Amino acid sequence: MIDSDFIAGLPKAELHLHIEGSLEPELMFALAKRNGIAIPFASVEDVRAAYNFSRLQDFLDIYYAGADVLREARDFHDLAAAYFDRAAADGVVHAEIMFDPQTHTARGVAFETVITGLLSAIDEAKAKHGMSVQLILSFLRHLDEADAIATLDAARPWVDRIGAVGLDSSELGHPPEKFARVFAQARALGLKLVAHAGEEGPPEYVYQALDLLGVDRLDHGNRSLEDPLLVTRLARSGMTLTVCPLSNLKLCVVDDMTAHPIDRMLREGLRATVNSDDPAYFGGYIADNYRAIAAARGLGRDDLVTLARNSFLGSFLPDAAVTAHLARLDAYVAQAPAE
Ligand code: HPA
Ligand code: ZN
Image 1 (cartoon, rainbow, N blue to C red):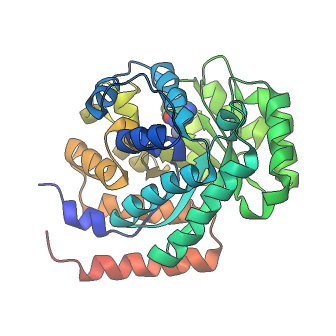
Image 2: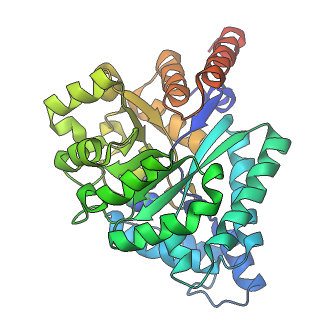
């Protein structure tokens, strides 16, 4: 039996979430109407029916098209506010969320519009849910590095409100080495560094993310398991992997949830976490990801608690905040009714 309520109440951090990927079809329609935009779908059911992907690029094509309804600061606010409400209901007490400025600036939406909308929702989430949130500015790797550098330059006035930079979009053919200079610039600004690597790309891309970008955390990282030396290195260095089970299933990174390697990662000493990636597109938010993996792999409370513990250890929060979150997690486990 799945420990559904235990999972929902388990205090946790979400470390891999694309805010544009939390755009539910209902909100897509509402924003299309509010902004007078035509979308190529007749109904919410039509949109959901289109969400069948056999690889990352199938999804990205629809994800970028969907983002076109986001035009005004209040759209970004409403998008993020809806995510924070759902995350809070799923036990998320801290979230480090990615946004893709280039998806918007390329359509003529100013960086300022995007970030002011997101920041207003972040301030509200703190007041409403007691949730802390950090922003991860993610570069689109299918674009060139000059575009990423221009994006980092546009972000400079808000750098105090950004926690990290990331790297997402089409992985194959766009290795981390393409972005070594912009990542060095971000590090010089005091930002943390993350990158998607080893989702579809080979272990070589993970090595590049470590050695050429110097990432502080690895998004996905699944294909690291193909290289025992890399697994040892990741385990010894305590590198956090932000694993996204429902995403892995929808994008065919795994054939079946029963074949998901999450427990193998834990057994091999990797600091794996569970996250939702693009929940509106992949069929569930973070608690659904915990539930899906618990059901498919028969995870018990010990493993679920380890995953939640790892989410705080792998966060970019200061040590004192992590310590406080771990104490609350222990208190929750101690008082939880027996299975
Ligand atoms: N991989 C790469 N790029 C993305 C993803 C992902 O899972 N989600 C949104 N952009
Ligand atoms: Zn992702």
